[in-house]
Length: 132
Length: 349
Image (tube, rainbow over all chains, first blue to last red; front, top):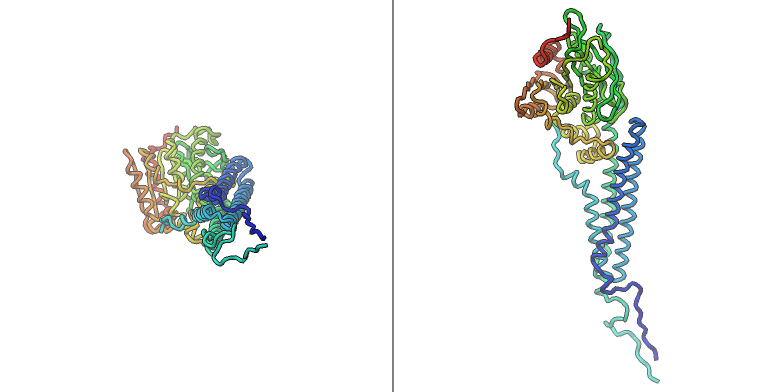
């Protein structure tokens, strides 16, 4: 007698695991982290400017520029790594049948795209009134 | 012994494997790729925008200082070098004091005028004729305190903020007149202080006078009412970039240097100068700071109770060229304005 075997693949869906909002949180986390890192680097630039002011402008300007640029690069790196991980995580959930969780993550990543693009959108959309 | 047919039944589900309908729920592969592409494009666009804006901001706030061109002794006038700290942040500024010369040849500092130059130049600005004007006013009996604003001339390097930080320099000049080591102690401290400024210097003077009642009368030549529209024109034209980079540049300038160009709005504060008299001058063919700026400043200043405001549109004069265009006529108008405000020289004979 040959018995059929059944198995449950690891991480298969159950109702409790397939939660939309946990997916949204996971998709939004990289953006929040990016914003926090960006704000911290901007604050660090301001602090460095205040501390370095007694050195004179020609001395503190390069220091501040380096901090600012490194801050931009760091923020970009946090963004890239965080979004990549969230994207792969969402794909993994989808493959595991956690469709609702994956959907939450996809929507959050889509919203993150818009938020990240917001400075450029505002720069294009906000009216300017240049002098003639 | 019995056997069971273990061949799969078409349409039946194998236990444990997801149904075809469940496997297709959620983002299609194409949609996932679209999201990935959008995330990549958004990041590239925004961080590139930030990088370019940062670069432009560094060019906006710094220019190598220009050397002084001449000094008052070339016109036979006595003068003394001075140094004083800006109010608030203590940036040490360099300048000079030229005593006024009365008709009988006596020196005086009874009525002292602070001369405030324009952006990216210094107290001798040959283009605007600042040294010549200083000499001319001194010969009319007004002492002149002219100095190099931060980041210009002989003063130390500093971010050029089009008036945002420079107003502290003008206030420092007032403090020096009141409390500093006055180079002509035998003449006594000045009785009254007036201000004359050109272009950014005029705007800076207006910002300073609005918060310092000791500046008793103001001549503003070719000031802007609000610097942002000027920057919205100049950043694309000088930077060779699309206008969309202007907001990013202004934000970067604030983040890196602490310069808030949105606060450089003399039109918002000029009314506070009242009842002290103001003479607004502008060239009729000024294509750098449009003459409409004088109209805006005049309207704002006139709105104050007890306002004493005059405006003078100089025919045929380009930006900061009213003195060069009119010469003696210009000097006479300015002298008459300050004499009406301060009265005649009252120094002891």
